[in-house]
Image 1 (tube, rainbow, N blue to C red):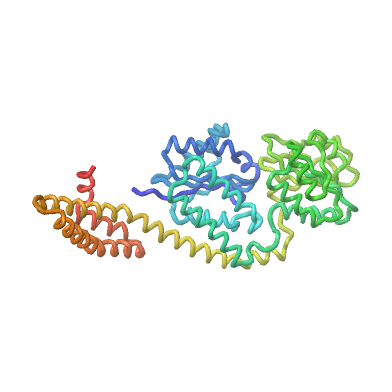
Image 2: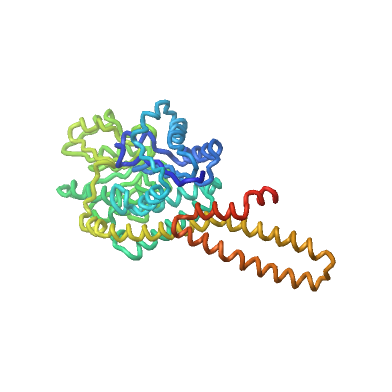
Amino acid sequence: MQNKFRALSLSHKSAPVEIREVIALDEGSIHSLLVKMKDFFSISDTLILSTCNRTEVYYSHELDLSTEIIKLIGLEKGLPNVVDYLEYFKIFNNDREGIDHLFKVSMGLEAQVVGDMQISNQVKRAYQASADLDMAGPFLHRLMHTVFFTNKRVVQETAFRDGAASMSYAAVELIEELTSNTYQPRILLIGVGEIGEDVAKNMVHIPEAKVTITNRTFERAEALAQELGFEVIPFEDCIEAMKEADVIVSSIMKSEPFITKALVKQMEIPSYKLFIDLSVPRSVETSIEGVPGAILYNVDNIRSKASATLEKRLAAIPEVENIIGQSIDDFYNWKKEMMVSPTINKLKNALEQIRQEEMERFLKNADQSQIAVIDKITKSMMQKILKVPVVQLRAACQKDEADKMIDIISDLFDLEKVNEKKS
């Protein structure tokens, strides 16, 4: 039985944010899960991707290990009832479907905001994590480099990545719309990780806003604030700053909500206070909406307001899918070649073994000049004999008949027996 490339995916398409935040994996959990998969199942090609919109595991194995992997996620997250979440996972056990899904995710076709550029870097980091643990073999290395090359083609050949329509830009467009009647809206940005930093950089679209940045690591917030001309405050002062802000954007990683209903109730809200929660797990309690004047948006109900950009991206989807199809075909041609390579090598070894045995048998009394001539002739003959079955094997690959041809050649030359004898 041959290994198949498989995937399991829990995403914004199959699960609400309250489920995604329970399953979401941080870097430490991803590292631990990769090690467990390697130790328990001897998997060599594995990729784990976890973002605010999805948690996915890609792997190569002869068996469907989706339930076992989900149980390992439960073990990692301390969820004894993780089997209750099975219904939220989409399973890809068909080789091509799993590969196709990885390409679509990596290009941004499956993103909540279509064409989101952040996903490319997230996929690269996931691949690096696997490579660091020697969990990326020749198959995954080739697949990921094909993905990166495809992404480059999409950027260069289509309008799919034109403009700014990422999740962070969508949040900024929402803020701009909801503060349109507020003079110089005061915006507090809590957390400057990848998404928070992107939000800050997109704030140039609201030039009249007064933006303040805070982060647990003050130096990071200070460097970004200096670059963008924003104010910066120590993290311990952010509660006080929330009371003054019209808009609070939270993108921090915490296991429990940072902004609670009890905290918001203590704030005086004369007209409105907008909370944008870009964290998964969520950092703002949903119950704050019960406080008069408090308005909450999270990653599930933010919709892109960049309509012109989004329309261009949607129009470019057929082009992107065509490029993906070409890349997958190219990858499969390589995969098929890899499939027959062991048989070609076995056949070469079998013929070489026969050649060596016959040379030894008949040239015991020959001098070195005779041996050299006959060695050259027999090597040439062997290459010509090899040519036909090798050509046939490669042709069978293109017709998806490689398995059948491998069996015929293996039986014809008794390759398994020859291999055992050699061992």
